Length: 172
Image (tube, rainbow, N blue to C red; front, side):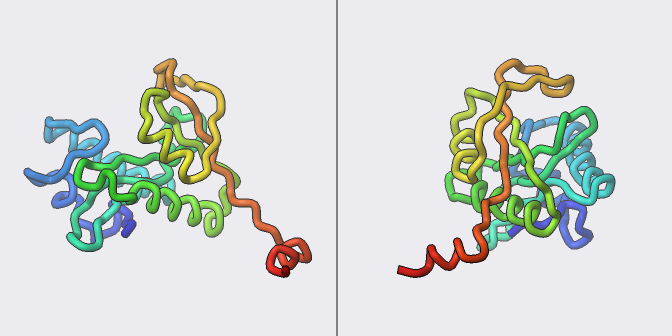
């Protein structure tokens, strides 16, 4: 299940800040740094009207990650970002959530494309980008992401066939 951390019904303290809550992104042990990270994620929703969704495991109600569009100041363009915490890894949650977000962005929000910035040594994220249909582009470097090993992976809306061509595919 995906839910905005800015939703008043979502308890960000319990999901991210309480002792024992799974850690995300930078796995900050410092409670002050972690608070600022969560405040930034929630603030992004208020500033842009979209942002990272909390990925909530239906069976347990535990928040296991963050997936969604992310466009902080200084980014060259919006990014589809994903961060799964240890309890949520290896269960297909990231690809399911990323695909749901892409469907929402392309069908309801009308976006034409979005990128994911992935370090070239992050095999799991590269595999996920491929699984949801992204294509590699050039390496990128920008002020807030100055590493030389980051590659942009482009997500595009699926090609929809309509009219006589669509009917031909259904007829034998």
